[in-house]
Structure formats: structure tokens, C-alpha cells
Length: 114
Image (cartoon, rainbow, N blue to C red):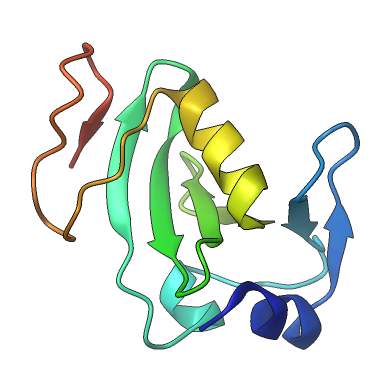
């Protein structure tokens, strides 16, 4: 999957003040990332900068999907260009693993892969 493919498939709206980032329209009952993209293999993270569990699904072109699992089990999905994803991951203090399932060697408190 590539960024443009998912952008064209669903109703996204730009996040104000966040170039390269879009949020999925609230009218879409999306569920987990695998519902948006069946081949998704998200990595799960926690960050002190976000109250929700974070699911990171990376795309072939360097962009990705950041999905936030809310306490009620619903997901908020953000679509990110390569630059938008890099900025957001830096703000969250997340260093994605080289391979899914590997531990993150960030060494920074709760910024860890689950």
C-alpha cells in the first residue's frame, strides 16, 4: 500500500496546522487498521505524549497510518505523508522498529513498542 492509494479510497480531511497529515472522516466506522487495509501489520506503541495506544502501519513509500485506540475501543485514524509521519513520530518519541515485532531501542521511558 502507498499513501496515495489510501488517500484516494476513503474520505480524509487535512489536519489544520499539520502539513502532510489527514484524519479519517468521523462518518466512517473504520474499526482497527486492518479494516482500512487488510494487509496491514501494525506495530503497537505507547507514548507519554499520547493517552491512547498507538498503532503504526508503515507504507512502501515512507508514509503511514497512525491509529489511536481510544478507551472505548474505537479508533481514530490519521493518514500521514512521509514527512508528516516523521514529524509526528518524533513528537511522540517513537522510533519505529526495523522489523515488526522487534523491541524499540529508544531507551526513553514508556516510549515502547507493545
